[in-house]
Image 1 (tube, helix red, strand yellow):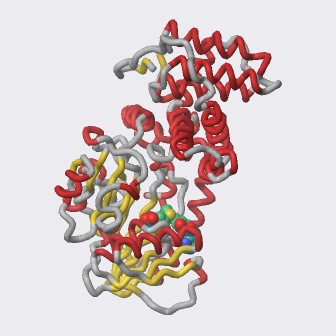
Image 2 (cartoon, helix red, strand yellow):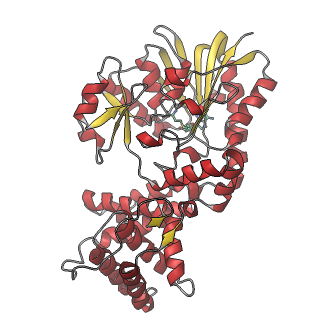
Image 3 (cartoon, helix red, strand yellow):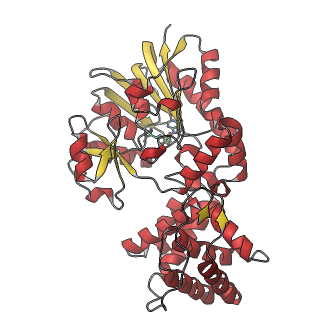
Length: 445
Ligand SMILES: C[S@@+](CC[C@H](N)C(=O)[O-])C[C@H]1O[C@@H](n2cnc3c(N)ncnc32)[C@H](O)[C@@H]1O
């Protein structure tokens, strides 16, 4: 796709007659289902993956279907720019889905054009609703193959309201960086258990050790088959997600509360630092993964399924982590669907929840203790605004400034207040990282 300032990938070429074009047809049906489920609602893609249509596929085909849907989600704006230029009027959604899926394959995943085009036409033929559009599907896709996709803009992949927000908050240059970050599939980051050598893990997974101790690898596929997984040497955790616990800086023998803990990457870090950890989460199913990871890594924590505000226990802690539920707009590289699933009203709704949970967390901090608040959201209402309001409500707390260099965080993430505002466009030379807001507070009275 020719995007301003980026190298243009090879155009679509129909080089070979389809020989086995039935292979993969079902995978493309599922790719369309996954794409539409993701566009419909939050967690739609994951839910659709557990439905019979997806489960009936061989693992390799299911992985392909997911990859196609993710590619379509990441580049949806650009794909639609290409289609809209070639369509005189908008076709039924089912037809657009077929074409989106085909272009995601040819333009992003570099699937051979003959396979993508012929399966799209075959799929159009199968359904009486799309059958009348079979020739259109064929003509449009072959047209793109012959003439190339034309100019597209990375910003088109962001919903308008989100682009407008980020432009107002971070400026035009940052918006351009965020849009470029949103096009790319991220690497996988691993956090290591203490005593495990980052250089050895990096060598074993063909990765690189980043500042802060995270190992980053371009490997794909089932992490459970990677070296060191069964030994519990590491867990998957984005480099930015590892920063909040480093900032909390717990020591062996201290008590720590992880108030919204599941699926548990940060609990593992706290336990690995030697703290006596209590991990709360309102979702028992999400905590299951946490317990599995504790078992695999040989780390321990007291795991309790309860909404934090209902936890009847009078303990207070040296260190409290509140990784609050949020819109998760900072995770768009790994979860491109969050940008489509998040609706403007949700920002205010989740900000209310965060406000409430911050006060609950504050009550659990011992005098002289500390708390880290973080969210993987790029929205100020879920970050800076929360802490400004919290400090106003709680004069017994003060901000402690973060030192990005000591935390493995990009230096430009430091705000004038001493908080961290990590943007996915930072560390572009290493392939970026998730967006996070992180602030450390101390109870002074
Ligand atoms: C951002 S996620 C936490 C991610 C986790 N800290 C990690 O590193 O893997 C937010 C979590 O908050 C939980 N949650 C939402 N409301 C809650 C509440 N009132 N009490 C406790 N947990 C809550 C959700 O179930 C979700 O697992």
